[in-house]
Image: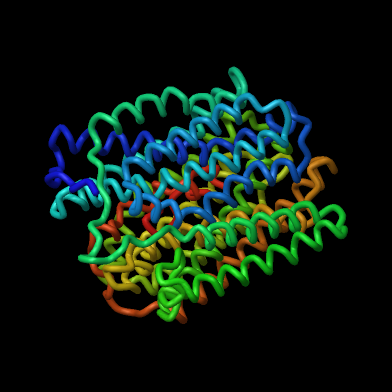
Length: 501
């Protein structure tokens, strides 16, 4: 086993190179998270895709990403964080090229699933490299710099993606990853030291939980198939898929309960605060993923926005997050996360209800802008305290697992929202503007109800008082690097509330 070299200091030449490598690599995943929603109408026109094809374009990525996040982190611990990070980069880049060349919607969906596999190594790997490479005294600053740059990546995504889609083709939003990856790979190989945990004396290193990863991937994919394909016509294939999905997820829980080194240690859910924070995460991110997926369709298909206009119209969400998330995190350190996590989802719900004003004839200044500003304010109030609450609920030894679980919960919430919400509200994109608007308004109301439930759960389960401790992993500058929280995220804001990595 390679012995890690001396700890890297923030501000040193090596430190700057390490931050650059992690920002560029994970930034590819974040960038795709902000632009794919904007590209959906163009993809539908070019590949003759219906609503289910668009749902799968988002969910194929989320299935593999959500189910493999924890395994991706474990692989880095087992085989070396730099090595696995590079493998993830190559996988993600190759999949991006396949996305850009896809001749039909089926191949695009398959390539998106492969992208999720690569992102599951890039996302946890970027933060793991930072925390294992930098001197403990400098980790908070390194993570803060990485978070700020990642947030900037999310912010420029809609502009860059919208311009590429309008000026050339939706395919370039994937192909642009190739030169970014080439630079990132070079920097990583030359400047990033290899690292992995030292095993305890006489102990065998823990083997990755491949069985758990296979079961949870099969379960999520089968359920997504049943929900998306069964929306139009529930046949025997969809019923079988649903049964397989449920059986696989039950088996996953049983396997995790009996493994010595499980991918998902079930014991951490004994913490009331940890469980409650993740339930709040699920509610808020389900509302986020479902509502923004449909809002982008509403803006382009009903209001006639170009791709660049649709992306730019949601930029206030990211800007509010960038401006206020750190301050909300500091507030949570003083008063505790309970009240921000209880009130924040209510503000998000208010933003979603304001979105019911968006329809044919709506103007940006009076209808769209107020809704997205209130929506972003609610997210800013919620996400940083949520991050801190999750990490404060576990001991130091389980912070990485807690963060990974929280990331996975956010991804699964977005996945299920995109799969379920269109059918639940009766959305039909082929039914004309009135049908799209009616379905979108119902979806916004459903999302508001989910957020209200999330706020209530937080009030009941989160501890009061200033219990949150500052730590590198709980850096309160992190939330905006999550692709699920990007203006057009499905995800997404790529790093959810945990480390949001």
